[in-house]
Image (cartoon, rainbow, N blue to C red; front, side):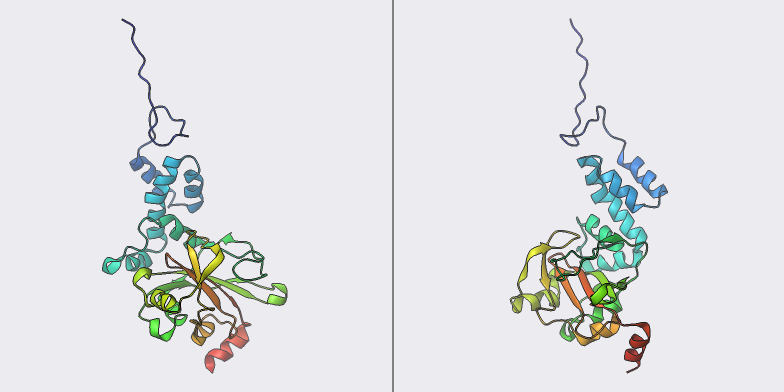
Amino acid sequence: MVLVVKQYRCTHSASCLCLKGHISEDALFLVFRHMNWNPRMIALFSCVSKWFDEIAKRVLWKEFCHARAPKMMQDLHSSGSHIVDGNWKALGKLLIHCSGCTNGGLFGNINVPGHFVFRTRFSRTCGKSILPPQCRTDVLYVSDPCEHLDQGEEGDLGFFRGIFKSFAASKVKKMLIEKQAKFHPKEVCPYCKAKLWNLLHANMIPRSASIRLDAYDDSVEYYTCLNGHILGLCTLMPVSDSEDAKEE
């Protein structure tokens, strides 16, 4: 009788080369917790294999989001909201990445490369200021503008991003549908690849948005995607001018 050597087959993905299974998820959890949920390491880890990417999406990005913005995450999931479920990677990227824009993309001929942001403050108050008055019961978290100064003829630009709580049930989405707003014909959300509505074209950006963002009037433009992510651009006023505008 010939003994047959037991063959190990990886069940994680067709491209995975492991022979006897991966390290346990509990061990990976402890390793990344020790690294304080380093987003660069999570991104590198997710590139190793499909199985690692699935763990990153399901566990690691979720823990990163809760560690980076605990109160915001708690609010986004309160009152039965599940806006973030299954989309932690997109939210993690939104927390730390300024999308910028490419020439001929969402914001015309402006070309500013996207980049990681070390720290950003997200505010519900700011979010309320950029919503139409009839939609201000919606909950929207928006970042402070990421400043890109001296952009030639465009002046000082500020990119901002954010996320709605329960966007599917929001008044903003209902109004966009009632207005029969069109999706952008080519561009998609840089965070989740969903289709985008332009709120400037839908005439849904109030003057309070420019005041809150310290931007020139009529310079604020932003999009929202089907998953409730926000990305926008404004032309920032010099500090002295913005202070005068607030006093008025």
